[in-house]
Length: 199
Image (cartoon, rainbow, N blue to C red):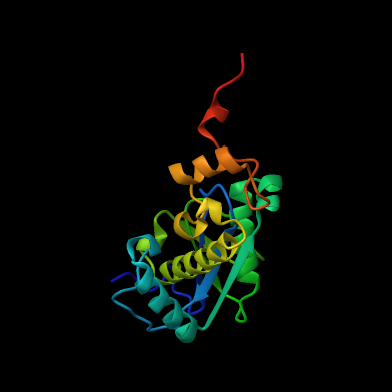
């Protein structure tokens, strides 16, 4: 089982993002404060769980946590400030929405910017080490997946309900055939041939 949290503070929030490597859709972050004594054998890095387990855990996290929040940062902002800054912005926005102010922030990954003077710690692969980061990873993933399924209805030819905007061969073929949409990240390399220079 994962450890509860990184610090000794009672009100530590874990934060994580989903969708950083996608060609379309938002980057989505969540922040979660779990109660002291919270434990769960199944809770883990969202990438290691089935969709049904993530959905089950989503309900559990939402009902059991002290506070939780989710935030999307949309492609136009990603294109303006770059994906790293957009990921951190999404995390900051989700922390800001918490109804309880955290005393400490544990962050999945190795990059973060100070938020409101609250002490923080970045943890590489933190979503596989601490329950609060794992919980944030599940909320970020499930809410982003739901968003991609919703916009799939508007542009079904990209099959976002399946690929969630990631750079699959099918997604790239659809971009080649149908062009881009308002949901695509124009600052990303959407097609492999963008690597080749016209000489």
